[in-house]
Length: 98
Image 1 (tube, rainbow, N blue to C red):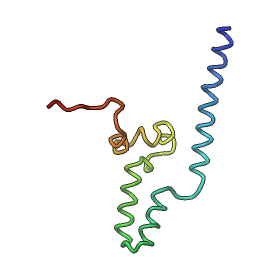
Image 2 (image 1 turned 90 degrees about the horizontal axis):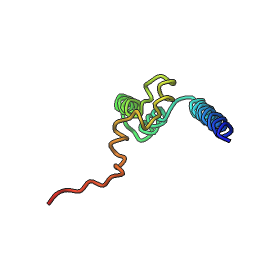
Image 3 (image 1 turned 90 degrees about the vertical axis):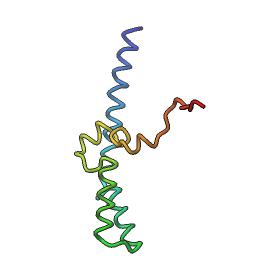
Image 4 (image 1 turned 180 degrees about the horizontal axis):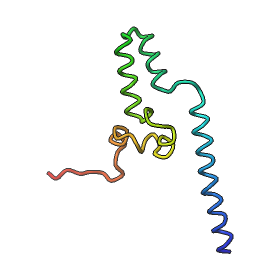
């Protein structure tokens, strides 16, 4: 029975990695990234080209889109972005001493 559970756990682990890789590849297939679409949106709103490019580059850095694809996959978008991590509240409520 232990052998069966261990074997199934190993298969499940590799299956999750495979599903994650396929999902990541499907997300990366379309041309451009979120920052490119954001830049197009800013340009459509009338923002100057240089400002839109600067803001798009800031978004790429913020979410780790400027890193290689392998690093993006291994780290994940939220785990590598300190700004996003600072927005997510801690599960332990902080209380202030009065």
